[in-house]
Length: 360
Image (tube, rainbow, N blue to C red; front, side, top):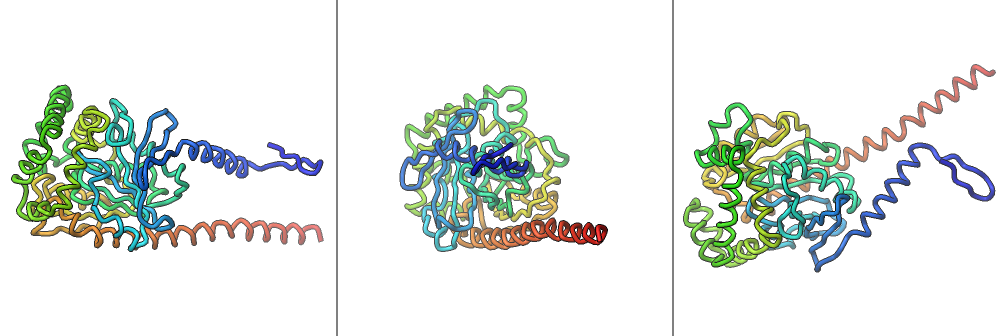
């Protein structure tokens, strides 16, 4: 590739070509970014689908993606967004396909989501970030770390599930309802779709009643947490938002999570931090222990008296840990890049010296 300036032709090297192409691609991506409100955004992906997210916290802070759980949306996060700003974090809470602000992607699998995230990071010009996932968002966070380890400094898993099938020993930490769901996803997915449709009708008809019924079957710690009026408001708003695109996206989620993840969790090289409650009645603590045993660089914290929703009480603590680790690894990454950038110059210098000595 040649550029002409002041009558001279200057050859542009392959690296410069890649930089220019990437800049043009980012410019096209940025044109697709639409602001829907003070925090809500939507981008058009390369296949034409829309990906929705909320962007809040410190605008120049350490970027951390937030992945919501199953039967949720980006709005299910902690209601106090100021915590992120106080900790110097920029949170990007993403809706998965078919949920909230994101267009449905029929037939998707867990391993499809990292491609959406890769495009989003390009659009937002984020080279490396942390990711924190609650409950059913966990498999997607691990998929991103497995496919793009260079883009993620740390993964946080809060009450996250292990594979329901396809791995040795899964029967030891799953409950009968999990195993039934896995078999149904493989042999009769239409049953899951019907169940999600019925669930959506109940949620829409009387969300407060459905919330009360769900809470009644939870651990005592969860019942106390969700008795907070502010958190009840979050849950009711979430029930409406997750069906914004219809019921298809929630059905897709259920089928995705019931099937094998599609990658070996033992192959994840990004550091993973796990938090799980021993009294969890939604995702059994055995799943958290399985992840802790099989992910190479995993550090787990198990709370003996917590259930599934302790994230609302421990959000500041958890986010603080992840932001600190992400910053530390970002600094290490910059130092490594600086060393790599200096190394070719040193080699070139020594080669020039040897060439000069040969000529003399």
